[in-house]
Structures are given as structure tokens and as C-alpha cells.
Amino acid sequence: MVSDLKFPKDFIWGVATASYQIEGASYEDGRGESIWDRFSKTPEKVLNGHTGDVACNHYHLYKEDVALIKGLGVDSYRFSIAWPRIFPNGSGQLNRKGIDFYRRLVDELLAQGIKPAATLYHWDLPQALENHGGWLNRDTAFWFRDYAASMFQELGDVVDSWITLNEPWCAAFLGYGNGEHAPGKQGGMNHLKAAHNLLYGHGLALQAYREGNLPAEIGITLNLTPQYPASDKAEDIEAAWAADGFHNRWYLDPIFRGKYPEDLSEFAEVVTPCVNSGDLELISAPIDFLGINFYSRSIVGVDSSGKPISYPGEGSRTAMDWEVCPEALYDLLVRVHKDYAPTALYITENGAAYDDVLLGGKVHDPERVDYLRRHFATASQSLEAGVPLKGFYVWSLLDNFEWAFGYERRFGLIYVDFETQERIMKSSALWYQKFLASQRA
Image 1 (tube, rainbow, N blue to C red):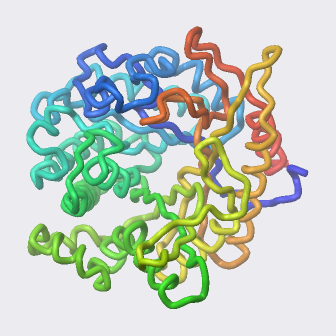
Image 2 (cartoon, rainbow, N blue to C red):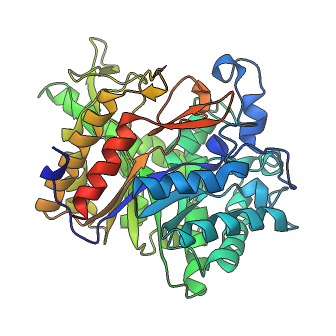
């Protein structure tokens, strides 16, 4: 039953999207090229050669999409701002038409009683800055600060909460380590340099925000993946702890403890020359909340040669081949609360891709309904355990451009026909709508 779970009256329920994944209008109103524009047009980088040129055409259909958000009954909408819309060259001349679009979007949200939650960086770096080294160039952190400060000045009076970075692990490792995401650089341990510059950019943006004495809250979103040892053997436990360092502690520790994990000595050797005096003080300045994006867990062990390997787990799997394991979300929330004591936590993304099919004008997705129901229950259990969880954003509002998978993976509560741009509420959207109504009864 949807009414079995009861959350606090001030608990924030929302949906989330990202600019490059839904906006389209890539060459309109002065928008500059992003690294994803360049990457998606590079042969064999994105499945089926898909690009975000049109995506969900949200740039033109935002009023229709806000009406859908209103219809769901959520409290808040988490969206991201496309840096190349604001500064087509990454810095320098501000593009007023880009600002105007986000002002129109925010005004529409506020008119419908929906709280705007803006993410400053969801991976669409201006290509002009990548031409100067991108996140491997420390200067990018300062350009990010200037962009952030401009957004605070332009929208600081109307945005309820700000997120500096979305998933710096992905931006750093997938972008500059294994090259699976834009800008597609494969650089050995270079991703650690990119990660530090991303975190330093977060610190600089946070400093600019505090200097503005703005009323809203500000934080950062990390994608955190619990790492479980495959057995109780010492070598498996050690491998899982190292994986936790790579995926989780390398970002949590500098933000909350002002230092990088000391047990990852190889990583420390790479990052130490990148860290200037005062960097970690800025990075670890107090944030108002930590956003967590959670999708699955990892089970880690070692093979006969001592090399780390991953095991699949016993839960059902999504279309991304990710194990469904809501229990891991509980473990993660309790662990972060216990080890790092953030003032407040939000689940800023949680959802699942399934092979949705449109039949007779409807999309029946019982797997997604079950996925959400189980994760909501886990969130409720974490509250009972004392975790300061303040909100939960479902990923995603719409089927969209799913990065290297193009349009072949559907995460949306709302089905999008990418040929006609028709939006159709899936059964999971109707379930979420009913769930939210039960919370307010």
C-alpha cells in the first residue's frame, strides 16, 4: 500500500533532471559548445551515435514539463544549469538569453508552488575551457567560481537550494580516467588531479556563496556506492575498503575532514603536488547539506592472483545491469551519518532504468514501482535510525539522453516519444502521485 509509509510533514519530495540530458536547443540563443556536444558527435562514443541536440526539447517545452511536475504533486524540482548557456566561452561575456531561460523556468516553478533546486555543474563543461585543459587545469576552478558567483547574483533571490557539483567522481574518473564520458580522456591517475580541481572549484563557489549572504542552502552531491567484501577473508575486506576509498572516501574525507584518505598511498602521491596551501580549508568549509545519489552497491573480492574483482550480487537487475539492493541505501545513510555527521542529507537521485514499452497509449512499469516503494521504505527506516534525511528526489522526471547510452536507457517517470516529443505518464508516475497524496492526507 502507498499509505503504509509516513514521512515528516516538512520532508521534501522531488524529481530531478540535468541540462544536457533534457534541454536540447544546443545551438540556440547564444549557447556555446559543451564537452558533451563534442563527445557525442565523436564516432563510437555514444550508443547509436545519439546526441543531446534535441533531447526532450525542454528548452521550448519547459512550461509543459513544469505542469507535469505540478501534476505529480512534488515539493521541489532539481534541475541543472548549462554553464555554456551562461558563458558560451566558459568565462568573459555573460549571455543574457541564457540567464533569461533559467529565470523563466524558475518563475514558472514558483508560480506553481514548486521549490527550485539548482545544480551548477552536471558535467556540461564549456568546450572552450576543455581546450585549455578542462578540469586538469587548476584555472577551471576559478572560472567555475566566477560562473557560480554570476548565477548567485542573477538567481540567488529565487532559488531555494544550490548544489555546486553533481557527482565529481563521474566527472573526474569517467571523464579523465577511463574516458567513458566527456571529454573522453584516458589518463591513468590524471583523474585524481581532475577530482581535486573539481573539489577546489566547489570550495571556491561555496566561498562566493557565503560572501553573498544569500538566504538559501548550499551543498554538494556525491554518487556514493557502498562496497561490501565478498567474504570475511582479510584480503576481500581489504579490497572492499580500498574500493570504498576510491569511490566514496576520496570525496567524503576532504569535504568533511579536510584531508584525503591516508591509506590510499598511491593516490596521495599523485594528488599531493596538486594541493596548494589553503585548498583543503576551502573544500572542507561547512555545507548546509550533502546530496547523495544512490543506485546500487558493489561486492568486491580478489581473484587467485590477488587482483580485485567485482561480484554481481543476488538481487534483481535493472536495464543498466545494476543490482537492486535498497538495503544498501540504509547502510550507506547510517554510515555517512555516523562517520561524517552532515547537518542534513538529501537523496538527490534515486531511480531505475527498465525496458519500458508503450502499449495502447500506456506504459506499465511495475518493476520501477517496486524499486521506488522499496527505496522509500529504506529511507523511512533511516529516519527511524536517526539519520537527518530531509528529502528524496526521484531520477528522473523524463526519459532522456542517458549519456554514453544515448536514448536506449529510460529512467523517467514520464515516457518521452523522442520523435514527437509526446509525454506520457508511466504507471510509476501515477503511483508516485498517489503516494505523495497519501503523505499529505
